[in-house]
Length: 199
Image: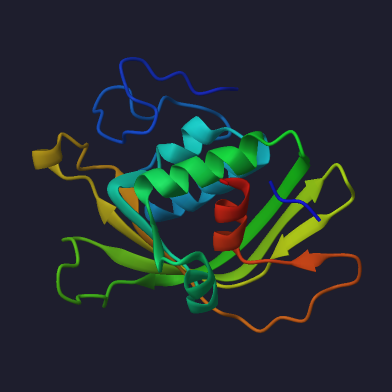
């Protein structure tokens, strides 16, 4: 096996969330980023529509994606930087080998007790309790991600030129979750999808 509407944004780098007036235009299928849950919605819509620009808009400049330990040991790094994550996600969403992406994320309540050192002010965590990400390839392979995810959000920082009424995703931790594979599917981690397609 081989791995390998539109929101109009004017005057912004598509990979930069720093923009006050044009960051998120009103769209029927995308939500304004005025709540962390709206970013989870936008993440799912960007995957279904395979629109990397919209995915990139939810990420804070300091964003990191923490890989599962087994993936980190194999890849040689424990996390992906903002640019590495964006590169891998772009490769996944734009791959001609991929014929369809289906995604459904069920999340829990906000956790505001994450005041560990260097945690951004007004930050909180939301756990993706049920992950159902299915990536269909033209060769018949179906990659399925079912692991739980911890997502950390913060409000915009005025000193960074960000809208303080908007939220950004600044950290994403993929959690090892024991789930038996279904018939006809190939289980994979989300981090592995990002890194494999990004090669």
